[in-house]
Length: 403
Ligand SMILES: Cc1ncc(COP(=O)(O)O)c(C=O)c1O
Image (cartoon, rainbow, N blue to C red; front, top):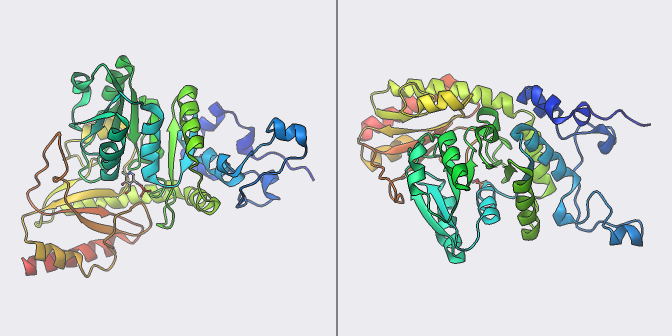
């Protein structure tokens, strides 16, 4: 029996773009014809691809040519990321960190200069410092709030600018369009770690970003059981370079991880919608707590980044930080030990809430970060908001009693 092609396969790029991202994520990356009629694509494992005859082999005439070059499960996931990124092509890699490092490897060469936001995810910074510098690439850091003044830092050999908005611990917003304008006028490319907002809440390519980076480990996979990343390129030339670099490094993702991520993405829009509202409600509640000195959440009207967030973003995820009023370490420990819902862990974007103490001041070089008191990064999961407030309330009680 010949089935009709799935709706998404019949649509061209313009028609797809008219669908809401939520509906796109339901239709994308599946075609009953390729899946024996089942709704989801199968998990295809494989290294060798066998060819029907000599001529086909010599011409590598096959949809998939070798295990490291892709497989149907991975292709389904690439399609899904592509359908929300709206760029020229996506590569999927085995971690979010690789999604940050791969496009840097793709677009930089020995002798080039790279500008990196001082608020960047720390392992990305370490890769720039320890690895890129060994390959003859100069790296310097800039104030995340620099905006159009980034042009004063551009050197003759500046090839790329790395952004992250907001910074994933300290939550400074960046003026991405201003940075893009200065970079493009100079012939440099802009990379952005867009894991916090995801393409659903910040359309990176529409704002001129050349390489849009996702730690798919977070909201796309969404269940704290997969490490994965994606990079989307704005232009076909940028995608060619990215894909060539991906192929040359052999960065294939396990098909089970690709499958689980695609499964997570079906509900990503709904999870994010809930987490945006829940995160903001808890952030507003925390602003009124006497133990809290300030809440670092760009969607709060009191936040210095609010105007940029409102101008460029269409939502917020549920990751933000709080600065406590000065308190001894033992009081912080008493607060964070014994939480019911808030686990103490580093990754985020899953269904569970997290509370993580952090120190962002120690490794900055372009700016100084000196909070009034201890800092905690919170991730709001899918639990009942009132239960989370009660959990935090009890934590504050332990903090006060131990201080
Ligand atoms: C902003 C940001 N980018 C990238 C990553 C890296 O993702 P992964 O843990 O999948 O390597 C993280 C992880 O915490 C992150 O917070």
